[in-house]
Image 1 (cartoon, one colour):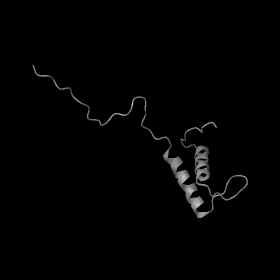
Image 2 (spheres, rainbow, N blue to C red; image 1 turned 120 degrees about the horizontal axis):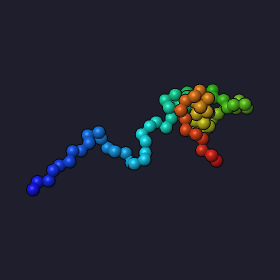
Image 3 (cartoon, rainbow, N blue to C red; image 1 turned 90 degrees about the vertical axis):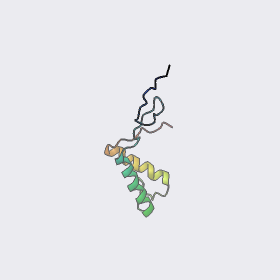
Image 4 (cartoon, rainbow, N blue to C red; image 1 turned 60 degrees about the horizontal axis):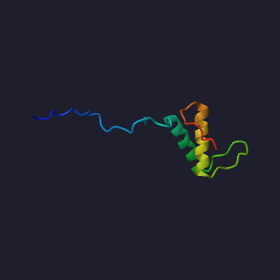
Length: 81
């Protein structure tokens, strides 16, 4: 008695159960971060009310994400500290 082969799916590998394959940040959000990083590199990026020059990479990313949120781009929620 020969065993019957089961047909396999040809769609590719399966991800872990429960995980979704979607972009966490929208393309608009990444564009805003790119712009602010470029401004920081040129030395023209300024922080909010004080207007001081931003030199920190992390702060530049935070400013870019904040601008993206204000413009309505999809950005994950801030983590509670």
